[in-house]
Length: 145
Ligand SMILES: [Ca+2]
Ligand SMILES: [Ca+2]
Image 1 (tube, protein in one colour):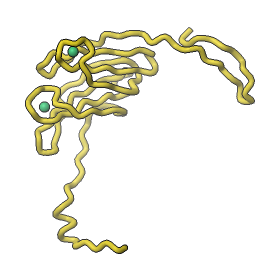
Image 2 (tube, helix red, strand yellow; image 1 turned 135 degrees about the vertical axis):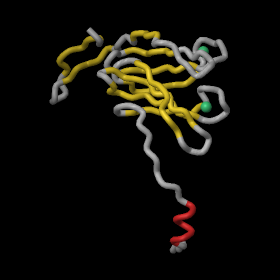
Image 3 (cartoon, helix red, strand yellow; image 1 turned 90 degrees about the vertical axis):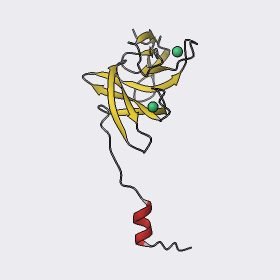
């Protein structure tokens, strides 16, 4: 099968790419209307801002454009994020798991587009069998120690 497209038609149907600065080393994003204005926004987690992880709130304008409006600190080296109401008050919250701080951080939503400082819960490590390069078990400990 051969697809033939008119260059004029192709140019008019494609929009140019836009990049948005959200923080250093973003590793996760969700789309949601966090400020309740009816337009989708972005929330990103970024791994290496000022030696910590942070969360960026990026306002959407409904036309495919966005602007970062704020950021706040979360755990160290965040790896994943969920946007959900975890305290059952009807307002979505941000939950972040972080590798280096080995914790889960909860940032409670205030219902007007803001989120509270992190409430951290340490995640207890699981028993790990450390093995040498040849596969021989060299220790069996619970991390972190
Ligand atoms: Ca919005
Ligand atoms: Ca909530």
